[in-house]
Every structure is written in structure tokens, then in C-alpha cells.
Amino acid sequence: MPDAQLDRIDLMIIRTLQEQGRISVLDLAEKVGLSPTPCGRRLKSLEERGIIRRYTAEVDYAQIGMQIEAVICVRLERQNGESVAIFTEHIGRLPEVTECLLVTGEYDYILRIRTKSPETLKEFMLNKLSTIPCIGHSVSMLVLENRHVAATVPLDL
Image (cartoon, rainbow, N blue to C red; front, top):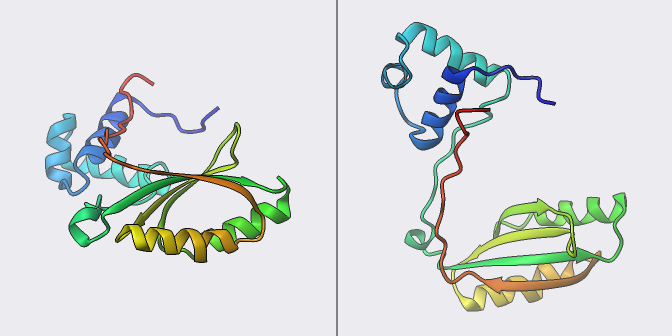
């Protein structure tokens, strides 16, 4: 059960920031129907409570030369603390990995990878991923199209 008590205004602030991360407090206040000072206080509280963890930029990887996107499902040889620690330590050092999800089901992790070309993806698979000692099996899939759907907080939590 979450600790955070959020009202509709808090949820509107969060949703607006998810859609427009660079919005000014003045414009944010107008969108959620508050004056700037109370809006700023609520925003600061959401940040201090860790509900809003950080602000980021969504990057169009293709425009910076990272043309290839792949999803890799990984099964560890053993599902124990040591294997998880080894795997996550190695993955954390690989700049090609943009996302690492611990999941349930047939696989233990799902990785999202970005590389410049099919050759650099091959190099990643052969010279980096396959050298992690605790990986038992992996399956890679090339992403043909990414129809990004913005995840936003529902206003009726």
C-alpha cells in the first residue's frame, strides 16, 4: 500500500509534468487551477517525498546515430543472489543497455539495447553480453518500430 496521499491536484501536477517536463511553475499552476505559490509548494513536496524522482529528456536515438534497437530476454543459469549481483554489475557497465527489467515468467531479465548498426549489435552480443558468466540463455529481437505511448498517471487513483 503506497504511503503517499495524493489528491486530484497532485495527480494533475504529476500528469502535466509527465507530458511537459519543462513547464514553468507559473504555467503549471495555471493548468492545474492553483496560484503559483501553492503549486510550487506542492511540486516541492512531491519532489522531497520522492514521488517525482527526477527530470529527464526523451531522446530520439535515431537522430544521434543509434539506429538499432533490440530487446533481449535473458535467463540466468541460477536465480540466486550471487548470479543477480554478477549480472546487474556487468549490465550496469554496458552503455548500450538503456533499460534492464527484472521480470517474472520464462526469463529473468528483459534488456533494451541501442547500437549504431547491425555490426555493433553483433559486437555487443558476442563480445559483451555473451561474456557475462551467469547467463544461461538469451533471445534477442530486433525492434522494427517503436510506437511510444506516453505513460501517464491516471487522475482517479
